[in-house]
Length: 136
Image (tube, rainbow, N blue to C red; front, side):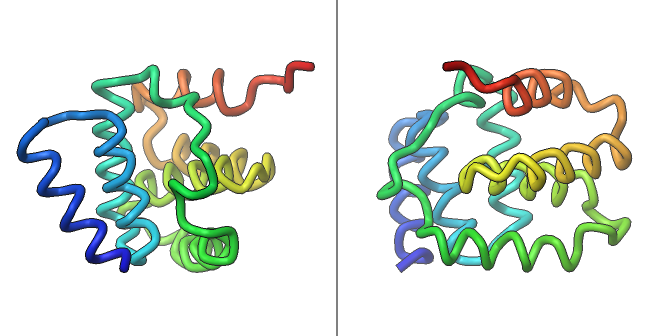
């Protein structure tokens, strides 16, 4: 179903290029399908051009289910220290950590991203938003 959803979101984006919710849906479909690098690139593009989306909380129906997200964390973690695409994997690891509300995963992902690409312009914004102290 995730591959089917990816095709549908890609088609929707042909009609309305850059639509933020369709782009997020595409990234979530890619993540659910195990297309980690594609999902990471899609999310980076979304956050670069529409940074207001960095802090969006999605309903559980709009993201892969929790077991699949936890499986994604395990899958990404196994490749996290590989040099190739390290910054992209760290970014996606942090994003999935945010989806499952796991601060340790977010911190490790952003630290990996920072060590691989310390001058990444998204990094300060991601840290400020995703690692902000919880508000009551």
